[in-house]
Image (cartoon, rainbow, N blue to C red; front, side, top):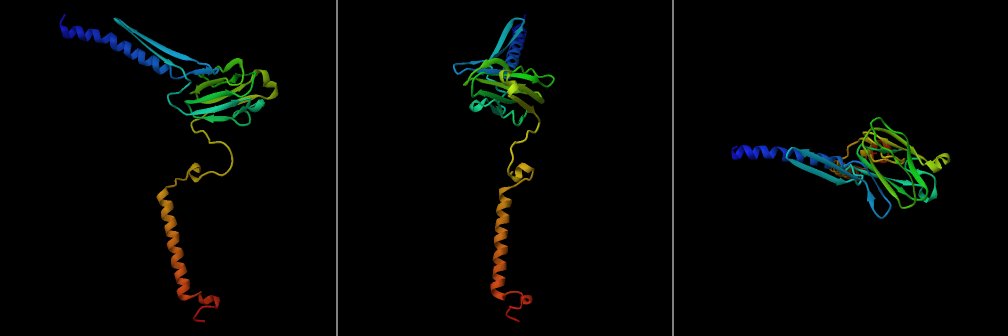
Length: 221
């Protein structure tokens, strides 16, 4: 066998193993993780094997969605039996957002009631206490309803809505840009200068020629 043919044959399994390893790392980026203050659980791994070579890729599952946005839900803040946000109003997020559930009081868990088709979210059923955190990256569009099992009868339920264009939430005044009106800083400055010029011209006219003849107080009355 010629040297060139030998090198070409040897490179095929190595390339296959490398591609499989990369796929394993990508799959590890999405998932869930938990933390009790001393450590974090949740790992993902992928292994690819080719004839003549083996490649392995592994990554820690920190609940991240490839650098997407993140939101925080407080579980039982101040001892109250609510998820904030989630109970009084649904938490709206975009696909790929990582939600961190932070236990603010004791004896709570997260049990899903309904999830969109294709979602793998299973919540966190073990009862946990203050200081515990649980994260999950929501990628499937739809509504996720869940509750705290020990306090479901007290109304401790929550909702996460994964939508393409989540609203900012909350009432009060909104900026024009939030209402879809594009505002450019240079246009605001130009409008301000124009207003000053018009005011100056009007003031000069009044001082020089006096008031309108129709008022009866002009100089030519």
